[in-house]
Image (cartoon, rainbow, N blue to C red; front, side, top):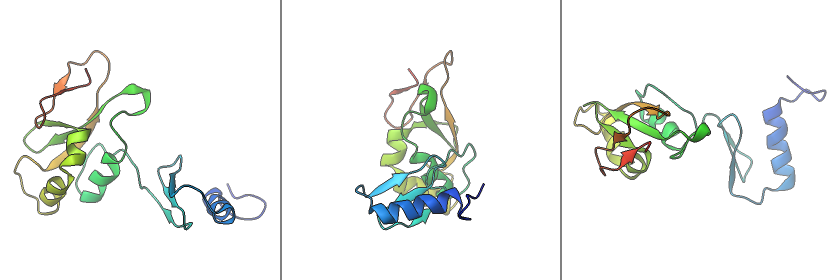
Length: 134
């Protein structure tokens, strides 16, 4: 809800950052948007996308990091049904993005993301063979 000055919360944060000349190079805010040192604002910089159809959705999801809130581990599902851990997806992002953009079903095309939960059997990464969620 706008404040008495008529600015939204995001605009107030941007104005505050510009006035204070942020010391860090960037800051990810609670809603997943990015605020850079220069004061520019990028909406949906980080976001969990369960279904991934575009390279932008993949990039937003891989930026979340390996461990999600609650201690659950992030993994990606490829077109062939294999699971890939977040570190491998980040490492092979160039190949994954190429496959998504060109709609190539070569085993690198990521079609979804998920998170492990307690009680689930640990998955195995198809790239590095490490256990996911163990």
